[in-house]
Amino acid sequence: MILSKNVADKIVSELSKIVEQHINIMDIAGVIIASTDANRIGSIHGGAVKILNEKLSELMIQSDDEYSGAKNGINLPIEFNEEIIGVIGMTGNYNQVYKYGQIIKKMTEILLLDSYMREQHMIEQKARDRFLEEWIFGRYESNYPNEFEQRAQRLGVDVKSAKRILVFSVRTMNNQQMDDQTQTAISHRIRVYLMSLKQAFLFRTATLFISVFNNLSDEEIHSIANEIESIVTKNFDCKVFIGIDSIETKDVVQSFKNANAALQLSLKTGKNINIYDALNLDLFITRMPLKDRHDFLNHLFINQTYEQIKPLIELLKVFYKENGSIEKTSEKMFIHKNTLQYRLNKITQITTYDPRKLGSAHLFMAAIMVFDSIKSDFI
Image (tube, rainbow, N blue to C red; front, side, top):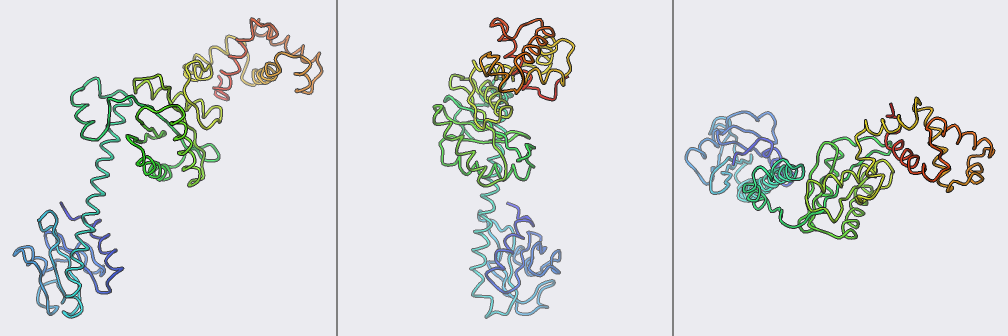
């Protein structure tokens, strides 16, 4: 292991909270890389060089001119995996610092081990995230099946059991994408929560948080979704939208697509949590190519602009919500019944379909959902 300046700075910072004397950390070349005395950083510490060259267990320096670049105090090797990777020194006279020598050495090695473990955890986490991303997006498993299973086993991911996929997105109260720093903090919070669950993993893309679980019932995964929403909204000023795949889907690639479709429906409707349902017409429309949705409206509402279609759609929403009742619709819209009939006739003229007839209702219901799915993007 190489003792980096970043790690050395953190160790010096921690130790300086406990002892009053100046502390220096030297690398394997004897260069001071961290110190409570900033003026000494970058200089060669002659005492450290002697320890490194002769593999001494300690070196007590009695005067400032005994070794080049060194001051009186105690210096000890920093050991990791039975190798000397640096030297730590404490400035001061013999009686002041000797009793602290072995303590700061041991504390340094403990802090170093903790830093190493954290680093290894981050490396493993990044490797697992990369593996999960390749698996969920279908970039790996089919091309290298043997290596895929070996990597999964090495990373502790069970790829043989059925999975459930949960996808969520966080938005500001103004419905904007959250900044990366906040999303990183959210990711950390959710990872801590998922540690309490068996085979539960999370990774991020630029816009999505994707969670993978061993097969759970709709009730169980819905409960987890509620907990995720609660954790995020309690700790961050934002909104959470969640999509969950269908329990019937066995392929993780398709599961992700279904969960993402459910998420898009959550974003469109404002409903925080949606579980994928193949029979849900809203989901079906959301997954239609955008061009096809525009074409559908353009063919139904012939030669009409977005601004011309919008009031017609709003009228149809009320009309079908009131089960086609002229009287109730006119009351809800605060217009005369004759005015309503005139507007319904206008829709018939534009589309050649009469919204008052049962045989045409399905077209206009679909038009309402298509229009809502594209909003002001309408061309």
